[in-house]
Length: 180
Length: 180
Image (cartoon, rainbow over the protein chains, first blue to last red):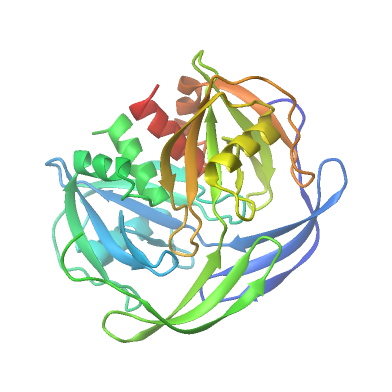
């Protein structure tokens, strides 16, 4: 990462969409060589993902309908940071809301940018262990079911092309390579 | 993935932003239990990512400035599908444009949805091998430099929190777990 430094400098811009979830900006920037380009980006508050580890080889995932894909997906529990919320608090809250489990222990594993070409979203990935079961209470705008499944079964679903959620694959392969 | 079927059905909606890169839609949907929710989503043509494998333990990545993150990143070569383009053709084209390498052999590895909560983007990940070096010719709107680096060095950068691009981490860990 040495050599010439690359830079894109903000010249002018405006918010072009202010949605409930998405805030889209259209900016004009100067590249390192001085010429101008348009950048369309989406501002995002960040999110946390949790690998809920039952300690017996099984992990807890949620299946839910993803409107953008028009189909169900299998994903680790996850959710956006509330205003002012730190990623660890968010991880514990989302785990409890989506699966009912309380995390006795939470370990930070890695952070990822899901789509650096058009959003500043940053996702923090944690492993939850020493969990206590409880009752799930998802947001009113989401319907989901929990699924308890082994790492090997998940790897199989990945290789079959069934598991396609990027944050879930990142978390699963990191767990497989470095933890379980 | 059995149990009750989840569904979100389109009721009404409109395109709220038509950008050069981003097309944003705001739809009202009916959930499985009948109540209505708003879904804001971004339509995307899809993309291809390439792991350029030099065959001597080193892979080729590109460092580039990401305006959304206001910093440089280290990523595998990648790019959007042109209209009507198939993912394999896109992979070869982007590899040649961004690094100059021509792929003698291209193997499909996996596909990922980077952000199923708000976009239908689907990324196809390939491994390129038996490569022939040539001259890079990136798009006029992007500045980048190639970096040749070992898998071990990349894993170290991942664990240091330097490597954060989700598609790159997916590709790297898949390669590490199942190939190299």
